[in-house]
Length: 126
Image (cartoon, rainbow, N blue to C red):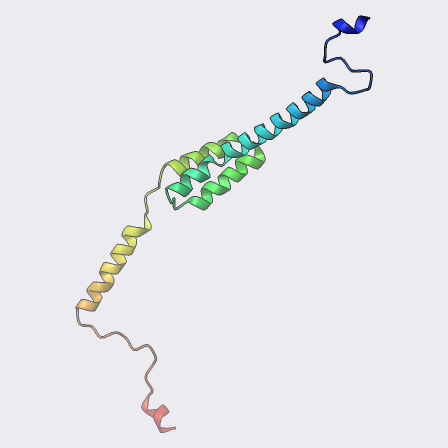
């Protein structure tokens, strides 16, 4: 007679527990969703660097992995900053200067040095 007013989440006489089953499924889903969100958050710097074809893409990836495994937010912030800003290419002007000097040397009409040493007269006689 008393079973009419008992709430549905109370364990039934056959041992089935609806509330326990629901909470188990809910907890597993929440853990999976938090994990997906966490990994998605940590991949944002790599996505930014990949979309802009960033020259320091590997550095951004390493910083993102360090942030993922160490749970240190500074690595993630550094990865975002490196992915967001492109550092100037210091080597390009130096290469341009070297190419200009090389082309000036060729314009003078100087004959290039031979690639292999010439034989001396003593070596030819042998």
